[in-house]
Image (cartoon, rainbow, N blue to C red; front, top):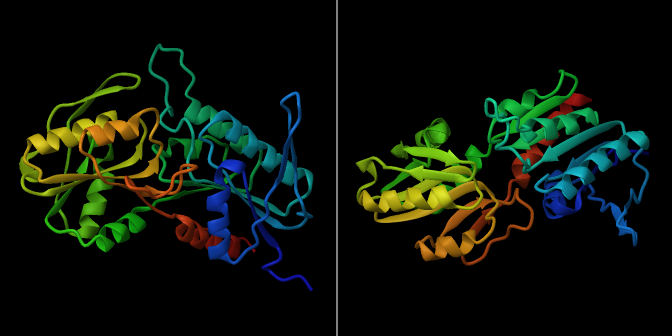
Length: 308
């Protein structure tokens, strides 16, 4: 006799296997590791180790690099080939998400949109994203894919409360994230402000000033992601210049590219809090990492329960 439990299976691209296993535990659904081998010529072999026909398949797959993006597409198409009942995708971190629009007359490819379209064209039934940089990518299809934007604000509020901090203020590194930070501040009953930031090149920003509300307070700078850390370090410097007693960082996606960890150390940043959405990120002397698995699991349970 087949049960509802047996009808569901969770798999992942290689990059998101750890998070996939955590989600499976919270859902009480089996996690199955996809078989993967490399041929001498560089081609990659994938195989499902068990029958997925007629089952609801959940694929967890960050697309932080080209290989992971392509692997996700292969898994989606493989599910269709072997007649899965539904194909449900969770993208914890969407690569190229800051490139959701092209600058006028630049002739650049808005890969945040075009890469997301490639995922939608593989015809998954459902795609969930976590803390998107821009919701514009949700509309990069023709209405035939159900999408969900999972916001982690309740997890962030819970994490900050667990730290039992006092006399703190939330700071957005730019006005673009200020509404999101204001929402967090409202839930925490804390003050908030935004830094005055200008972008003068593709990967270059300048932070000019921060309001004096940070004086004598612990500053929590909140953003959706930390990539190289340049602008958030500048924001921390401006906060200290405005009289902040200390600064910690909070971001969902901890990319931490290049020499960013060393930069944080050199600039007196001793604590960064974030989620496990970006592959390979774990807690250590600098990072305090919480999991989005329970939040994702509850959304998937609700979606799959409503779907049948």
